[in-house]
Each structure stands twice: as C-alpha cells, then as structure tokens.
Image (cartoon, rainbow, N blue to C red; front, side, top):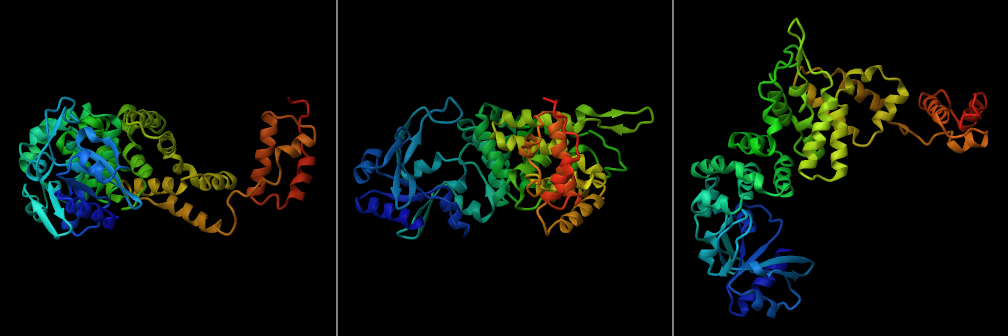
Length: 439
C-alpha cells in the first residue's frame, strides 16, 4: 500500500505540485508503527488531480478531496485547504484552498497535523506535533474549544487517541473536553458508536472507560453506567464494592483480544441492578430479575447506537442468561450439552469467569464446565438426531406439542447415551404413544 501511495506523490511532485503524506499515517511512522492507511495532501486542486487521474472519484471534491486508485488500494488525495465556519459540528460550510501550514492548523490535534515527504524522507511540522509525540501528549491545535466546537466528534477522538496511544491529554485540551462534553450528543449515534468501539476493542479499554467517565462524556453518551455508582451489593458476594466498581474491575480482567460483543456484555450485564435493587427487613440486598430487566435495557441501549441486529441479539442473550451458571452443575446432561454447543458459549463462559473474579472469586462452576468440555471433547456435543420428524409422520403422528415432546425426549436419551444407535431409537419410538389423533 505504501509503495502505491508513494507513486501518487511522486507523480504529483513530478508535475510541479507539493504532495505529502498527511495525518495519522505520519503520526504512526514517527512512532515506529505501520500505518493502516495513507492520506495524501497536495497543492494540486481537485481539477488538477483529475487531470492526472481521470478515473479518480470526485466524491469529496466539495471539500477538496479526490479518491485516487493506486494499485489495489484507494487513497484520499486532498488539496491543502482552510476551513470556513462550522454550523453543524461536523463539516465546514465552505473551504478555500491554501498552503501546507494553513492546512496543518485546521486539523484536530498536533500529533495529527504532521506531513511527511517520502521522497525526501522528511517530516514537515508546523504545529509542534513531533515534540508532542516525543512527550506522549494529546494537544488540540490552536484554541481547543474552537477545535471541538468545529467537530464534536473530536471530543471522543481525543479519548480514543489517549487510550490507544497511552498518551496524556494536555490540560487546556482536557478542560475544553470537560466543558464541551454535552455537545457530543449532537453527533449521529453511528459516529459515536464507531469511536466507542475503537476504545472498547483496544487492550487499554479500561483507561478509555475511566477517561470517558472523568471527562463527562460517559454521562452524555451512556448515563446508565454512572447510575451504577453507589448501587450497593451484598458484601459477602461482592467485596469489591458497588456495581460500578464491579463493572470496572471486570473491564480490567478482559483479555486484550476480547470480542466486542463480550466487552459490551461486561459493560451491560448488571445495568439493571439499580432499577431492581431491594432490601429485606433484615437489610439484605437483592436484585430480583435484574438479568431479564437488564436484557431489555441492553437492547434499548444498543439500538440507540444502531448496532447491527446480530450483535444486539448476541449481547442481549448473554445479559439475559448470565445468571444461568448458578444452577448449571445441576443440569441434566442433555441440557448441559446443548448449552455448551450453543453459539458464542465461549464468550458466555468467559463473562461468567470474570464476573466471578470481579466479585467473590469463586470459580467452582467455571471449573466444572471446563471439566465437562474436556469430558465431551471426543465426540460432537449435539450430533445429528437418530430420530426426525419424518419418522414420526411415517408412524401416523401429526406435528404438535406431543410431536415436539417425543423428538426432544429421543434426543435427550441420545445425548445421555440412553440410545446408542438409530436402530435402538426406532425401537424406542415404536414403544411410544404417538397420539395419532393430536393434530
């Protein structure tokens, strides 16, 4: 990808235009990381870029951006510009073309305001970005309040960069984030979700969680999380403290590569405890039905951020079922096998494990499940059934409650080794009352 991007820069420069790498790819290079993509900034206007690349896509020409194909990759080629006023907290109302220094000063943070000439192997720094990279600082360019009011998403981007880069946010920038935090609600939910997901998916997600809370951004985008603060729990089961402390501790226990649905499940698994908290006459704290109520709340929250339906269904099911492990050791073998064979059960089990480690530390049920997984490892947990609906229909049975009951009974026996073959299963079936009149 880099070679293709350099070829575009080489061609622009050979025709007399200034052309540099810009933004995040320069930041990553200076930090010694491999860039994920390459943006190009140039003195060539969109019309001049299209003269050199007639097949370029002018989808962003209004903002001076042409999408240029280089090899197998697409690159944003943007004309150096100066932004006009912002009225929607997202895009400038108009732009005018400018020079590299002016273009750098319109960007969000100093670490993203760098250019790099790959032909001369030279960093061009008009905003002090190299120094801030060296000192591991997130600093808004110019007036931080103005930067954030131009594009409210920059509030979350600051938290994301501080999280993934392990940088400190400079004090004036931090103060502006706190002041402007409520403005984040004017951003489209999808854009908020994308930034949050980058935080949740990073190994340093706990740092991001804390920054969102202390900045006031969590109160704006996920106020339900702050309601967990001060929600007491029975100390014999939760010596770590209130529900907020428990959730935060679980965040710290997630594996670096934890899946996004699992992270969201941790975040939301106890979201309904404040709403369901009661105290007995003796002062005992209870949260009756919190898993079921939490599933409803989780669904509402995830829909608010417009997550895909498949992810919502997975997280909601996990929140609803996270208390099932209490009685799991008492399950009959057939039900246990079906559970272990369920989609995403590994994440269900991991949620249980860190739920325990984030509270009383009791892992007996977790170890029981792991032992059962080893015990069942040599054969499919839920093999194809010996008996199907066709076998019942052939014997005069009609679909209905009894029909389903017979099939379930047959599979239970198969899973528990009560039936060893299809032949045995058919013999068993012939001994059953199929209720031929049940239609």
